[in-house]
Structure formats: structure tokens, C-alpha cells
Length: 296
Length: 312
Ligand code: SF4
Ligand code: SF4
Ligand code: SF4
Image (cartoon, rainbow over all chains, first blue to last red):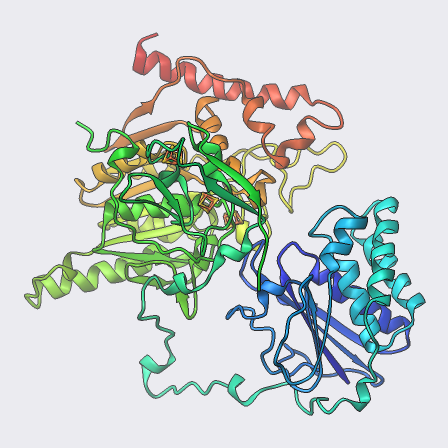
């Protein structure tokens, strides 16, 4: 059995990518099982999807904690403590969608390709990477290009994409497929015996009440989570225009604006999610926006 | 006189931290921030399943005051347990410190206020529980994919009221939770909106004067479920008030007073058009009948208010 785990951000099409991959596996004559993680988080937040592929019927259920292949749709997730895409990974293949050439010290093969660039070039929307991600996974697994294309078309038709957009996605999918190498997964040392890590098993002691209650003692510790990497557009304060009226401060949902000692608005880019409410409420048009450039 | 006259008076202290998992541009976060700014550090928040619950995803929390997570229907019942526990410490055990005087606030979505938690809330009001109950009303079950709730307005599309064929989307009207609560004779009941921060701060401040249930329903813009642009959260909330669709008012022991009375109403269309959940009223064909039904109901409401409060 091969275990693939996909990571991305809500709204990026990671679930569709995993479906494309498992449909292609099915067309290649495998048994396949795929499911997304329905976590409580929101658009822009990390999401994951899991696919098991096997020549035998698959009886196991549940999350994949020891993946053979990890596919990361957004490079900013690599070291995100919540997404934690490298968890349980070792010895297999890691794919990262990135325009950069990262020197990653991981135990396993590393493959990269700029899927977002391809999507921008052919489809014109940075978020539309599901076909590319699915195609890359197909190639890594050694599936044929025709099964891959067939799967892309089926899945995109199912979510109701118009024909012309599907065609553009097929172009992206083919280029992505051709841009990465194939692996003989059976020869990789990683193939997991089990789907679970020892640390996943939590023994709850029922004899002491308090032990069974999840407690957070460090109030406000969500600040360690850098939601700044959710941003697509970045608000910028023009200090020649800011009068310090506090209106943006009043309406920022994410406590990411504070009034500095200079009496003006300052944005906390570690946490600002880029909703741009501040820009729309500023009566002096002092907040403009630029496209966010992500760095690893 | 009101304590807060403008945004300049907003307290600096923050009892909410950044880094929550809620959608960018979510109205529920703006309300929580200002609510806690007024209620202050000595507050215990009770939360139940709903969007704001993901402010706290173990092992992280964005809330900086003590916080308890309860089951969906039991927010007000858990508040009763906390209040009773603190009161017993003070009255029977003679403990006298800041903690026994903590305020208890239940902060829940419309699912837990209008539907699933309605029974426990009604019972707590009936028992005259000394607590705050604040509903961030995004008019559907936003946490699970935007299904119809008792708070969904007429003609809204939700994932369980799709406007297929002749259907108008939600064919039922929104429950009037303000009136339902008022009928319980609670000391203080108020509506608030994300857009009117000063009004919101003053209402939380005023509520502190009363012993017993203090109930708030806030229009909480939900860009994700409503199909609206994230940056428009405040603009949409303001339009809801200015079109008359979301009246700002309070009731002290049942006596209603509006805290903002528009002299002229903007057409409801201006509000409806900002959201994809009402798109079927305009495309592919304009559905005049439904739009004017919404307009008429709003006008009838305000005609009564103008008569009563402005003698006009
Ligand atoms: S709203 Fe505009 S002018 Fe006012 S403090 Fe913010 S950036 Fe400055
Ligand atoms: S873009 Fe949104 S989250 Fe960022 S500072 Fe402005 S209001 Fe706050
Ligand atoms: S679904 Fe709506 S209410 Fe829930 S977090 Fe997102 S914007 Fe807020």
C-alpha cells in the first residue's frame, strides 16, 4: 500500500487534487481511498487530504500519520506548527510547490516545481493549483499520463467547472506531470508497516478527573500561530496620510493594528490575515495594498 | 451621559490575542474584542460549538480571560453552574476576592441562541441568572457549511435552502429573538452591529448596571457564508443599519428605545446586493415581488417606530 498525504490551504483545491490522484489510481487498476481532513479551520488555514492506494482491498481507516509521499501545495506550510507536513515522514518522496530552490534537509527525495507560476500563466488565478498538484502526485506514483488527464477532466467536471477552464487546467496538469520525475515506490525504504505513530496514542487516565480535561494555561497563546501567511494582499499604511484617527484599529478583527507612540496605526504582519477591512474603513485613504510575496 | 463618545474612547486593553483560526474579516471577532474590552479582565467566557469556538483550538487559545467550552445546547446552563459556584464561595464560605465577583458571559452563534441552546437560555433567563448572553448572529450555521437556522432571513440562500427553480431560498422569516427575550422580562436586552462600535461599547457598559440576564444579539457579518468580500464587513453591517434591516435598540425591563433612528431608509437592495446569498433575487431575472416584500416589512417596522419614538 502507498500512503499519500496532501497539504494546502483552505480554498486552494487540495481536496480536489487528492480526488484527481485517487481517481487516476482507480483508472490504473488500483484500489483507492481518499478523504480530506474536515478540521474546524477556515479559508486560508491549513488543510490536509489523505489517499491510500493498493493492489489489495483497503480495510484500514483513519488519518495517515506515516506517509510515503507528502505533497505540499503551499511552501509557507512547511514549517507551520499546525500543518506540520513533515510529521511522520521519512525516507519517501516530498513534493513542494515553490518557485524557490529550497535546500531542505529531510530524510527522503525532494521534488519541487512552481505550480503557482504555471497556474498563473495558463489559468490566470494563483489559487487554481488542484490539477497541477494532482498531476504531480500521479507522476510520482508512476501512473500514465492518459489516466491522469482522464482523472483531471472527470473531477473538474464534477465540481462544475466550464469546459474552457477544464481545458486550461489540463494544460497545466500536463506541464506539471512532465516537470517532475517518477519513482518506483516499491523500492523506497519508507513504506510504512503501520499507519500510526506511537505518540498518536493518548492514554487517558480515568481515575484522576483532571487528567482527562484538556486545559490551556497560557491564555492568548494563539499569538504563536503566524496567521500572517494567510494573506494574499498586504495592507500598507502611508504615514504621510495617517492622522491617527483609530478607526482602522477599531475594526481590525484580528487585533493586528496597534496605535504606536507616534500616534499612528501600525500593522502586525505576523498576524494580519489580509482582510483589508482597515483599508476600506480608513477615512483618509491612508492604507493601500500590495500583492504579498511569500518567503519560506 | 454615554461613557464612549467615539472610537477615540475605545479602551486600549485587549483580551483577545491574534492568531485565531477564524476567517479573515469575520465579524464575530470584532464583537468579541469590544465586548471584552468593556467587560474587562474579570470575566469568564462560556463558548459552545460555533465559529467562535475555533478561537480556541487545543493547545492554542486566542481568548485571554478564563474560558470554558460547553456542549452546544448548554451554554446558559454552564453559566449557571459557574455563577452558583462563585456565589456559594462568597456567601457560604466567606471568600471575598476579585474572582468570586467575576462576570460570566456566554458568547454563542445564532444556532446556539435561536435553536439548539434556546431552551437552556430561556430557562436561565426565567431563573433570573446574573449573566451576559451575547449572540453573534451570522444568520446560519456558519461553522458547518452555512446551513439554515432560525435566524436566517427570508430569501437567503443557505446550503439547505438553495434557490432552485421557483424557490426563493429560505421561505421562512427570521425569528425575532429580541422580542422573544424581551417577553421574558429580562432587565436588559439590546441589538448591536459590528459597524456601530461606540453604540456597542455603551450598551455593554450600560448592561453592567443591571443584575440578572443581560442579553445581546449582534449582526455578525460572515464573508465566507454570505458570499461577500472580506474587506466589506463593516460597510455591509452599516448598510444593514441604514437600510433599516437591522435596528439598533435596547429594552430596559421591557421598555424599548431605539439608539439609532434613521430619518430616511436606504433601499434594502443596497444591502442585499452586497452578498451572494441574495444574488438569485437579482439574477438571472430580477424578482421584484420578493424584493418589495422585504422592503415593505422594513418600512412597516419603521413607520411604527417613527410614530412611537418621534411622534411623526
Ligand atoms: S484609519 Fe487611516 S488615518 Fe485612521 S489611524 Fe488608521 S490608517 Fe491612520
Ligand atoms: S488587513 Fe485585516 S487583519 Fe490585516 S491589519 Fe487590516 S483589518 Fe487587520
Ligand atoms: S464562517 Fe463566517 S462566522 Fe464563521 S469564522 Fe468564517 S466568516 Fe466568521
